[in-house]
Amino acid sequence: MVFDLPTALPLSIFDNIAYGPRLKGIRERNRLEKIVAESLQAAVLWDEVKDRLQSSALRLSGGQQQRLCIARMLALEPEIIMLDEPCSGLDPISTASIERSLMTLKEKYTILLVPHNIQQASRVADRVGFFLGGEMIEEGSSDQIFTRPANKKTEDYISGGLDKEVSGFKFQVQG
Image 1 (cartoon, rainbow, N blue to C red):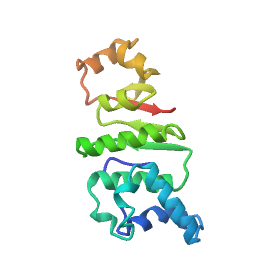
Image 2 (image 1 turned 45 degrees about the horizontal axis):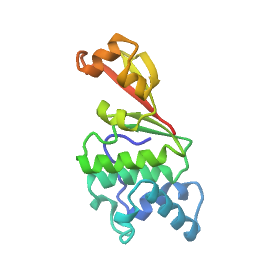
Image 3 (image 1 turned 90 degrees about the vertical axis):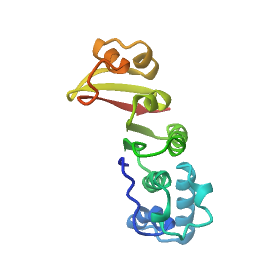
Image 4 (image 1 turned 30 degrees about the vertical axis):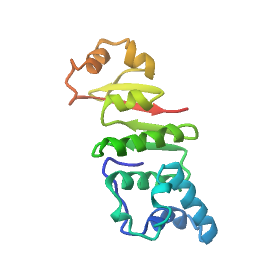
């Protein structure tokens, strides 16, 4: 799971990604290097950090730290990726980088995303569930939910006619 605020460990970029595999008993340097490189590539961060893997992860920008957290999670080879507002505090460029990463990752993983805004979900989600007061109101394809919602409450939320503080979307991004 990756939360809205990135939580880079006070370690090098390399050691942040290798942390989980090391806990699982992986010690061979070559294998760790491969895991780190593949995880950073999958999180669309490799090109930005490949020459400074021994630098502190805390020196990365907020968007880079968020992608680092995604890479750290990918190093564990999860079956499902859960993201809770991963772009809420990020600028549009960092948000676009995370969305590019999600578009690639959804080919291999099931991703559950609670987005910061519904526009992001409409760009990356394949299936959508709309929740109101803890109850699922509607579920369907992204296209159906955003263009032809079956429930009036869903339509009101999307059009801005429903109090967004008491409602929310959950999205499954799956290729």
